[in-house]
Image 1 (tube, helix red, strand yellow):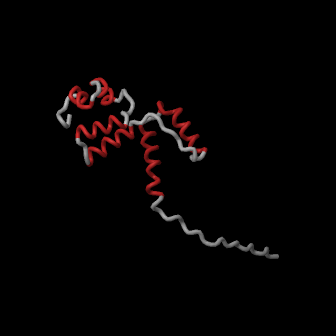
Image 2 (cartoon, rainbow, N blue to C red; image 1 turned 135 degrees about the vertical axis):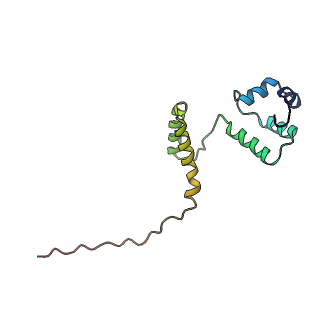
Image 3 (cartoon, one colour; image 1 turned 90 degrees about the vertical axis):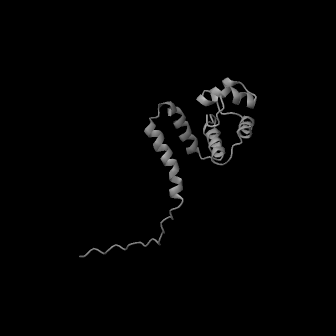
Length: 128
């Protein structure tokens, strides 16, 4: 819409079907291939913020994720629990999870507390 191009015109420009463009727009199709994204960038001559926004949208539309084999077991468990409840999460829960993830930015900027030498307290002798 921003470029004044109809779906059919964009499809012809990119060499694909208009129904493919439509399904991408409404989210009924998974993320496009890297080749398609490159053709779209070239066809619309995207740069700067528009290019960044498109690439972010492509990243956010991923439907499959692979956990790194080096991830701790607790990360696997957390992802399994999240996956099991994915379709039942309340929007407030989603927001809370996202905020917890963003905490890492705040935590890494805080210096850990200094640990002093632990001094053993002596017990007083009982008075007789």
